[in-house]
Structures are given as C-alpha cells and as structure tokens.
Picture 1 (cartoon, rainbow, N blue to C red):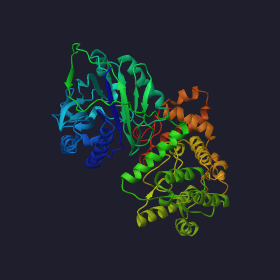
Picture 2: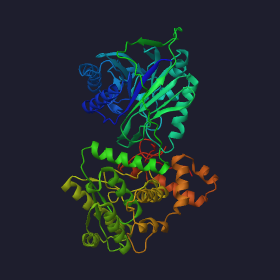
Picture 3: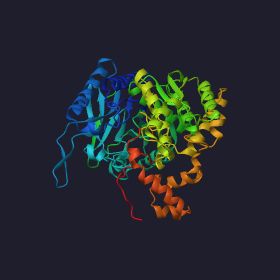
Length: 577
C-alpha cells in the first residue's frame, strides 16, 4: 500500500486576525515539513477563526480573506514549503447573493471552504455542503452550500476532502467518498466542546471510517472564541475503527501520522466529484513516525480544562492582562478564582473581599484562605459605611436594601476595573441564572462569567476535583473546605441561606435540567415525578428571569443547552396556565 505522512495542525485562531492565524499555519507547515509530511490539514476557518458570524456578510472582509489564502500559498512557496500540500479552512467570497425562495431576499454571499495550496497556488477548493442551523450554528443564513466532492490524488492515494457538518449527515459527500473509492478522508472541523461530546464525535468518525472503507483524518481547531470552546481532540481512525493517532485536548498540537492507504483505482468518478492530481516532491519517508495517541482526562478534568481555556482565551484575545472578582468566601467565587488563576496566573488575578455587616467571620476567613492558597493579589474593602448613607437617604428595606449591598460591591469592582484595566469576572452559576437569583447591576456585573454554564451541584463537584488534583501533584488544595461544606448564602441579611427560598439543589438542578436543558414542558416535568407545586415555582422563576439573562455576561459553553446562543426565548411571555 502507498504510504502518506499526514499532519493535522490543531491551531488556536483568533477571529479576524489573518496575519496571526496565517503565522500559526506557516509555523505548523514548517514543523510538519521538517518531519517529512506530504499533507498538512488545518481546521475549519483556521485562517480567519470561527465562527465569523455576520462578518460573512461583509464583502470587504471576504475579499480580504480570499486574498489572504492566495498570499499564504505564495508565502509557503517563498519560504521553501511549497512542495507540501496544505489544506486550509477559510471563507470564500464575495459571491453573487443566494436568493431564498420567492422573496428575492439576499441571504448569503460567502462559502465555507477548504482550499488546497501547493507550489505557491490555490490548486483546488471545496465548499461545505451541509450548513448547520441548530444549537450555536447559524450557517445556513450566512453561507452558500457547495455540491461537489473534491478528491486529491497524491503519491498514489485518492484523498477526499470534506468540512465538519458534511461528516455528520448521511448521504451527501460522505456517500460519494465510498463511490469515489478514496483511500483517505480528510475532515476539517470547528467542533465546539460540550460535555460528553466525545461519546458522540469519536463513534461518528469511527463509523464513517468503516462505512466508507477509508482512513479518516479528523482535524479540529482549539481554544476559546467568545462563549464557545474548541477542544481539538483531532484523531485519525482506520477503516477497521482503530485509532492510529490522537491529539490532546485544549492545546495547540501538530499530530503527525503515517497512513498506509489503499492505492487509487481508475474507477469512473460518480457525478459531482472532482479529482485533482498533485505531484509531490521528495522521497517517501523510510522510517515510520511514532504517532501520538493522547488519552483524554475524566469528565471533571475535561470540564475544568474547558472552563480554563475559555476564560484564558477570552482574557488574552481581548487584550486584558488581569482580572478582578469579588471573593465572598462562598463556593462560586472560590471556583471562579481558581479557574482564573489556572487560566492566566494567580499573579494576574485580583480578588476583593467586600464584607458587609451581615458577613460571617468564616466567610471572611475562607476568602482570606483562598487568596493565600492560590497566591492571588488580594484586598479587603468593607462596604458597611458605603451602604449606610444610601440606605438611609432612600429609606431602603427588605430586598431593596439587600440588593443595594450587591450594587455597592459592583461599584467597587468596576471602579478597580476602570482604574487598573482589570476585566471583571462575574461569579454566578447556571442554577442562579436560571432562577434569577442574582442582583442585576450587582453581583451580575462583569464582562465574563466563568461558571455561567455550570449548575450548582457541578460547581461543588469541580471544586472537589480541583482540590484532589492539587493533592495528587503535591500542592496545597486551593479551595477551602469551609467554602465547600457550608450552606450557600448570599449573606445579605442575618442567617440567610439559599434554601430559605429555593428547593434543595438536588431537586432544583434536576428540574432545571428537564425544563431548560431538555426543553420539557411544565406538565412533562411533573410527569417525571416532581412535586407540581415545586415545578410551578421553579418554572415561573425561570420564565420571568429571561430579561436578566439577556443582560448578563457571556461565559464558556460546556453543555448541550447553555444560556445564550443555544436558548432563544422571548422576554415578554405569558404562558397559558
């Protein structure tokens, strides 16, 4: 069988940074070339970053991106890398607008493409066929679908090329891969991380390899882009379903592997299949490369790494050097602080304890201990004397007085942000956001929310895992045991706990999983065995809190149904009883 040395460049692009993203690709191609690679594949939209959203409707952006593809081909050749065949993901355009139905309304001027670069030229281009229009994806509105399968012939092997969603849909270009008798299928992807995604993704890649009787090389981008996190996890699987190579998650990586693919045949090509023959210089590598086969961490480790990656890249890609957050001594702020310290270094995390007259001694001491364990920059700013004049002048009592405390804390954090350039992190979890248990313009203040998609029970689970991981490395567990064990409380009035007004979190998170994540109706949730009165209470809280969520900071998406891109419901809503 012919042998191809394939390199999958798992890069971390920034949307719009064509110069920086191109440099990542050049560096990867150079490293791959030094290892004798015949073919280098990058991820979906690796040249522009992903998702580009409505930049796909901006002609000037598309024209610049298209020029950048040709410039990249010329640069690779000029730097002595032109003999390596390079597949690069990018948007192509502007094209004539696609018209939808009878409305004659232009809906797209771009295509989601993967171009083949060789000897200084763009020698072929593939346009993505299936454009996802669900969950976080909005591609059908902004892209024009392709309809032709591309096959490259090099070193005696026919290499089929498709983009991301084309692998997930039965029929279409995947069906033609078998008909074209390709020996290798390269799939370029921008596949966001979700909890347990690997339980779906890897079986799909394996199934497609056996169905098409090809070796499948699946390359994914990595890193955070706004609220999305891409985990990499690029993989090569042979026609028997055996993993030949696998890249680690959440880091940039060049995965190099030798594949012994079936030799091409002269079978007649099916309709809508284009084949391009490429002459590859240099000799076939004599000695096989030792392929990496990374082992994924357990569920909690993957989730933690996703949160750290999303936080780190949001901070760095948006030009911040440091973050600040309130440290209450509670579990949520403790976990957020630990995520931030892991993401950008504890020396760049500024924790602020802001005790009120209701703050307990153990809350203050837990905040002190957390800061010491992590090595944070730390200060204490009491708020009682700041709250009192406003509370007195406006004669605030009850909830109004409680919320004032949260808003004074927000003023302190935003003042420090403005003075020193910190990004403010808000520390609310998914359960709180679901039921509206946060103070708008108070503890909801901030530009990024590290645990926005983490339910309360999972916050505790991740805290315990982070401490266990520290012990395993011979380090001090960062999160105080008191923060983990004490009943959660906003401490806005004497002896307050969350369970004064909310069901136990074991019940609450289960109801929210059914109502929010699984999108079950009220009666369907009751039918699962939950108390009707409790379901009434919880669902009403969720429905009437939509306006708060719309104004909240974004945070890393780690579930199949996060607040934000995934879930779009009206604010003004009166459900039928």
